[in-house]
Length: 137
Image (cartoon, rainbow, N blue to C red; front, side, top):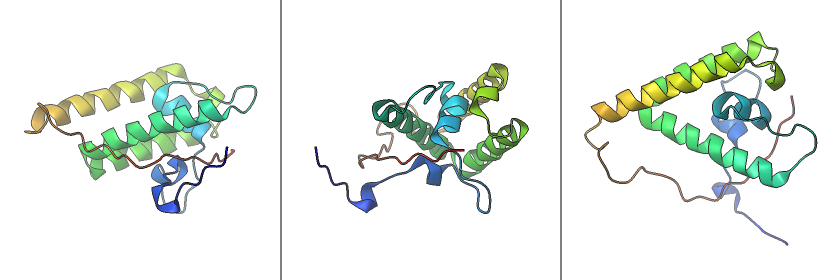
């Protein structure tokens, strides 16, 4: 199968969750932290990577709907957690992951309750194709 995706339609999670002059975060690390899901545990599986990238991207969209300030606060927490485990996804404490996921849910609930559009309508989801590249850490 030979598929071409125009570069302007490629969204790479490594570029979404990135602080300038800091290391780039692997899909494996982001999946463990944002989704509480372990990927790339034994072999490379492009389907597993694509699904993980999609779900990480949906987390990004949800955070951005809460606003860039919320997103950057969460991103700084992600980097702090990463430094605390030397960027090892397997070393992430499940309770720290669950706390971050709970915090994301609470922030979303508060933002939705405050938003007049929260009751319904378009979520603003992008229909762009999602292609991934994986950065190893």
